[in-house]
Image (tube, rainbow, N blue to C red; front, side, top):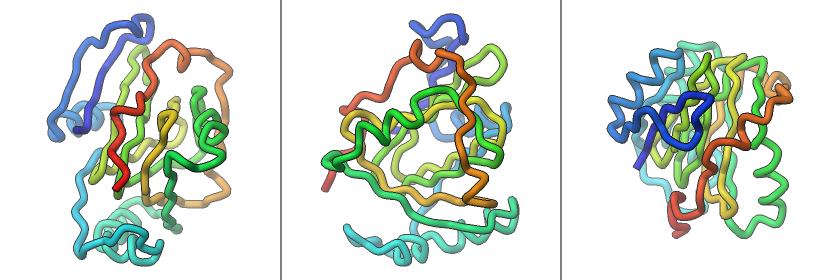
Length: 188
């Protein structure tokens, strides 16, 4: 189940509020300019589907978002627990950073944890299958895929070259809960 925990940035041990209903999560994230939607496939997706088949299953929502926000490129990324570089890939985005363009991810399968640092609050968002999150450019955040990552995600970009992490140098990400392997979906 998708989840949003909101913390004070000075009190990582206890969230100020926890939300599990999609409408509540979308409302809370909307207050800070973050898009959170649920998408449904318009056709079945078989395990091991190609990038083209995955994109085709969500084409209407992808086209709508591209028209609304001006995104120019779309691709699919997939990671499984047995990936040989999983630890390196996980470590790459565990520190607080920003991007010069929006970070938009739709979880076709599996899960990932986006943690956003906005003002004096930390918004910890567990995204699961069917969730789309759109983190605005310049938003301080980090991403965790757990020690045993499993996800298939559609990514939308204005310019793939603009999606480069600019690390803040702050250690705040080390103070907040990481994604545990048991919160991820089981690989079928």
